[in-house]
Image (tube, rainbow, N blue to C red; front, side, top):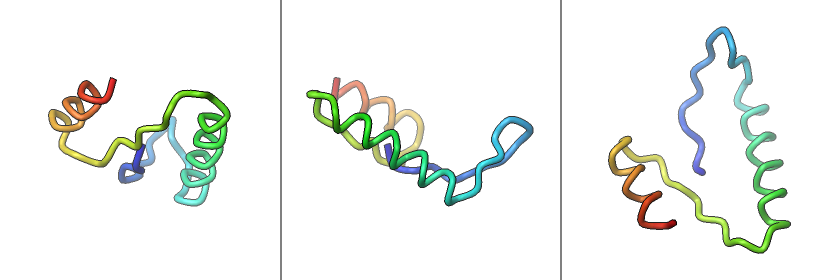
Length: 56
């Protein structure tokens, strides 16, 4: 998934570097799986939902 804008609150305190590190770790794990990775682009919610449903 492409990174969404970062908005910190009481539960989310990551900075941009932590966000990128987490994304890299997730992608690394997914690459170890046989399923293809589909990067979900940043889109308005309805378009994003449609993109996901079209790529199931």
